[in-house]
Length: 133
Image (cartoon, rainbow, N blue to C red):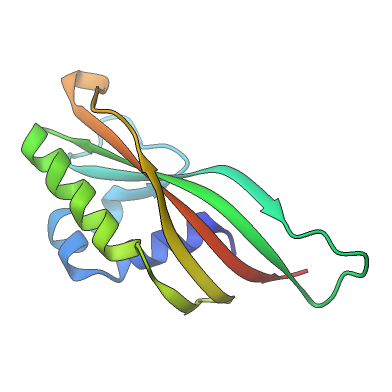
């Protein structure tokens, strides 16, 4: 399990997010051509494992995750960013196979114009978790 999986699971478990974006429009890696907007793209920016001299059964990992909102209008973009933050920020506990998960916001990107004259913005998260070694 990665931070991408964790954020994806949190987004798909939030009804307000799903009311705006169906699970089929929440993707990891890349959005397909012709995706119906609004859509969410979840990507790994960086990953760092805690280094210890003796590796145990699990390793503390910190992933920086970017959730890019692509929308038809600026209003959809700002609403989606707000829903993404609410669904993920400050979450703790276990998510799937990941134990001791902690999710913090890590900054938001600028407003940008995306493909097909769409509206885009990115919300970053710092996702810490214990993963099997």
